[in-house]
Image (cartoon, rainbow, N blue to C red; front, side):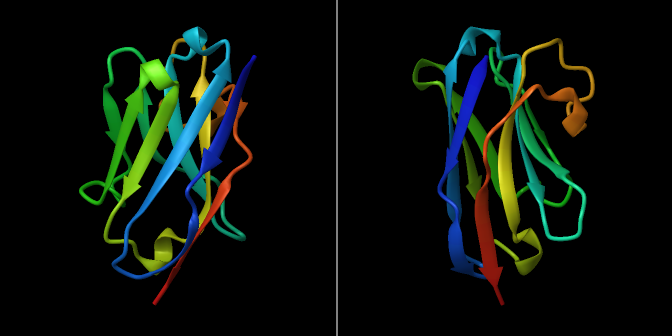
Length: 125
């Protein structure tokens, strides 16, 4: 079992920055990939970014590439998502998720085994 807790969401104006954190606990040695997803009202959950836990390889959705940066600190069992130049379309509940199997479809939420409770990000225009 892996437990995930997100924090760092909030209400900001367009152009501002936020930093989301995800703290993992439990059997963190099993984590293969940690991803960030988001879900806006009435929309499907979509991939934002991911990082392989051991090697630190990063992945980004095209909509956030160049604005968001994912990182992880294995010693602290923490992953972060630095979000810059935020836009109203970035408003959503952001979830971190852990894949403890061999990751094949990094951007597919069905790939991930454990999820946090989510943190709300609202960007006003």
